Amino acid sequence: MVILDNHISKPGWCCSKFDGSGFFGDQYFNPDLWIKGLIMMATLFKSTTNVVGMSLRNEFRGPKQNVNDWYRYMQKGAEVVHAINPDVLVILSGLTFNKDLPFLIKRPISLSFTGKLVFEAHWYGFSDGLPWKSGNPNHVCGRAMHQFMRKAGFVLKQGYPLFLSEFGVDLRGTDVIDNRYLNCLLGVVAELDFDWALWTLAGSYYLKEGVSGFDEVYGLFNWNWSEARNSSFLDRISGIQLPFQGPIQQPGQPGAKQHKVIFHPLTGQCLQRKSLLEPLNLGPCTNSEAWIYNTQQKTITIKGTYFCLQADGLNKPVKLGVICSGSTSKWEPISDSNMHLSSKPARHGAHVCLDVDPNTSVGFLQKAHAWESRSFSMR
Ligand SMILES: *[C@@H]1O[C@H](CO)[C@@H](O)[C@H](O)[C@H]1NC(C)=O
Ligand SMILES: *[C@@H]1O[C@H](CO)[C@@H](O)[C@H](O)[C@H]1NC(C)=O
Image (cartoon, rainbow, N blue to C red; front, side):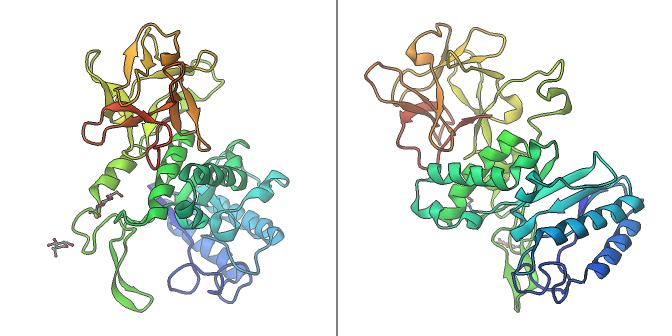
């Protein structure tokens, strides 16, 4: 499926605050020409069925930004696109490099159509920057998550879809900020079940900012586009490609079948049991056990069975049992990010956290403070 994305008015690398393409009225961003462009594109792709959406403009930015003009032109742009192609989704971007939509809380958008408006947001490690490097990643993750929800994620509560239309990392795995951010982001994406687009497919550019053959280290392809730049990254994002929620699983609807999966952002896999006798391990989320978390008793059981998740003790594998009343069966999501499942198996013992052995993929228990980049979360 293809989404047309109106990116920049003067060809070049996008985007900077002062590139003259940041907001209506900038040097290269004439609103009337922009409307003409939308009309042309909506007309051109009207009968192309795999063009499913039109994003009216990428990453507003710069000193001219203001909310009144955003409403004025976005409403106009949305209406012209809809009038020409009523089947296409209309996708609206926020201010400040597509991070800010909070003005919608007080002032809903007014359009003649319903049921096909989508908001989009971008979220990168560099949006929150250095704190990822110097701070406790769980504090930073918790903060970044709340900030994202306050500025963009809240539209979900208003009943609109939110499309995470850009995220990405340096795929060499050497950027600490990107690595920590990605663990956090994957947990949030799994939780909210976003549709998303990755920056970027391209392995390199003919020419970028004067450099020919520029290597794109965020690119899924390697420099010569012959193979994947980093296959472990592909494995990780495959965990969030399938929807976790579907139309029949909407909360509050009759027949909704809800359960939780225990998602491991570092691998993109989920906790499962191969058989009753084998230890719990990671596998594709499509094979995940259906876990039920009892918020009063704090037990995690496999749906439709008596089996619950049990913590034996430090450095021991996590296991299943049927006597679920003791402290070994109580679990709580902890830390600022809420992405760690913790238990306190012995009365005077320490908290342990669910972790995974990188060699065997078996779930085991380790000290609650040793959680640097590993995390589990119930989604
Ligand atoms: C792929 O990413 C992982 C994790 O970030 C990193 O450890 C690894 O070195 C990367 N592989 C390549 C080929 O860059
Ligand atoms: C593409 O690049 C990779 C390493 O970056 C190299 O191993 C491979 O031979 C190259 N393929 C072609 C067709 O040039």
